[in-house]
Image (tube, rainbow, N blue to C red; front, side):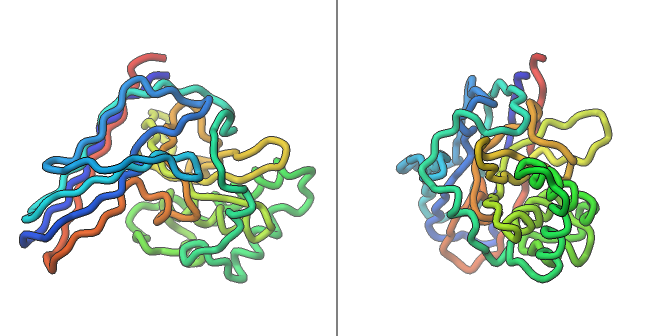
Length: 270
């Protein structure tokens, strides 16, 4: 499948700000499940700085905008050919050891409920792959997909207690539940092509990857109750949403910020 992406993020300020610095993780991952045909990332009025590939194999690019900063607009356009690898992250080069992803963060802190969810989910599992599938199914059952009921800083424990959330909450909960039973897991950001089957989705999407010994990293999307396939474009990963965020930035000044995001995915060819 060939997917086109048009992703525009705009930060507006009610008063001119000082220098803005952006760290962008907005580039398709290199692995067997996708091939970048064309890709462009631009920051209006910005100056491109250094670019590097981090230990997790993700490309990161720095940008700065000189003052006065009244708005920051980041535009991503491109085409990616995707392939269904049943969620397996084959051919992806990285240096970070999987065991590093057993660490907890504020967003994935494991409370008693998450510990119980993880332990009960894997009861009777035949092997580690079966455990991973059961964990994803348990999170999908425990947290109903409902936009608008959580926010950026909602933790996995809070989403589970509430029983509702969006893809970020599902991903955080699955990461926490997997780590609760000593399975390395991480948060993944990317895009999801909108289908017509009525399944919940967000064009800018998030899911989780769980390390299964003998296979490697495997993606699981509890929000859609599946493993990532050719409808998904993978951008980057981290311990949680903050680490895997496609855009991270710092702006000097006391002005209030307003965020506007539009993401459109289209299929060009099957």
